[in-house]
Length: 178
Image (cartoon, rainbow, N blue to C red; front, side):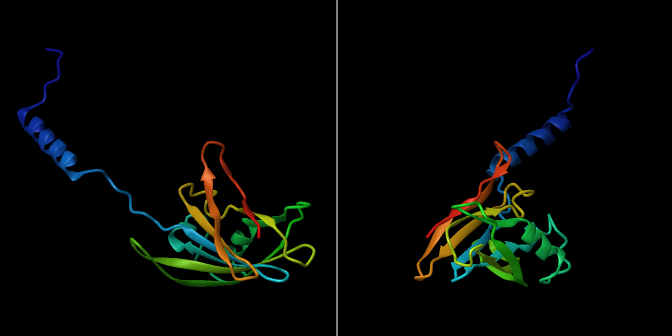
């Protein structure tokens, strides 16, 4: 008498549920677009245009106040750093504008924050550097940032992808060379 018994009605309901799950195919998560950081070399440094899905950014900072002097601007300034390759000198950074807009992706439209930044080289002349970028990826470990570079001669190329490394809990800087 110590055995548990499943009623025929419960067994039938379980069979219907299992058949439904088997027929539904693999589960698919709703994909969220990556961020995009486009860098352009200028005479004294690098201009950057950063597009971040607002839904991802809202997970790490209050996005109700958008402006060049806002918590969002402060957050971005604290999570973007450029260091010179030769001597490790830290470049200056200014968030010059923040704008709200939309982006079209393969799987739909998303609200975006577009941030305009200017990185100023320590010696006043643009030189190769390492881009340390941890905004959003430090807390949303599935988030990625695609980085591109346009050189003074107008050539554009992808530099790589910023992503969180779960094995050691780091975000590796992107080498910016031209």
